[in-house]
Amino acid sequence: MSAKGRSQSEGAGDHDATEIVLLRKVAKIYDLGKVKVEALIDVDIGIQPGEYLAIMGPSGSGKSTLLNLLGCLDRPTNGNYLIDGTDVSLLDDDSLSDIRNRKLGFVFQSYNLIPQLTVVENIEVPLYYQGMPEKESRQKAESLASRMGLEERLQHRPMELSGGQQQRVAIARALANDPVMILADEPTGNLDTATGDDVLQLMDELHEEGKTLVVVTHDSDVARRSRRIVRMLDGRVGSDRSVIDGVEL
Image (cartoon, rainbow, N blue to C red):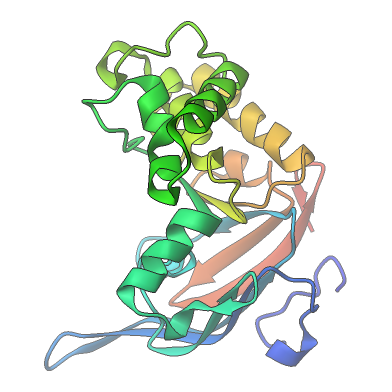
């Protein structure tokens, strides 16, 4: 595909077979009784391994619904969503939960840490659900904490940390299960500019290491750090463009 060649009009057959995430003609309709709301309409997006993708759009554009579908928190009404070769649009709730635990990592604006748990215990949560042995789980969590510069905070609880430190814990937790894709929802929304830049630098490093990142943001400066921006408008993909050196092509 060319720099501008990811048009919404492309059919699923035009996608590259190496894509690890693929939405084909996806629609999401909410039935509110007398009213039906089309939150997503005919969305066709493919994501390559190692891509750094930003999703933008005004309120009501469908970007939050798209994030929920990508995160296996909801299912499409129509169309197909394949992740790592599995069509998750056909799965039941338990199977969707399993996909989330094994293949996805989440970073939220509000961190979503468990307040009763320590830093290292929060990082271990995905590993607990995977059934990893306790010793191995602890070693991996401590290694991730150290990578995030939290080696002196292992036994602290979230309320004892700054916002930036909490987001570092959340990123470490997102990496714990070696996910196929990391989904970040406004990851710097609650942080000051300097702290937010530190978190974005971490995400740049993850991208350089080959991690697949999808960031939902309203901040153009955050989006321009990605390598591709999908703009949602009225439930559809309004544009899908590459980013080179901070410039949207």
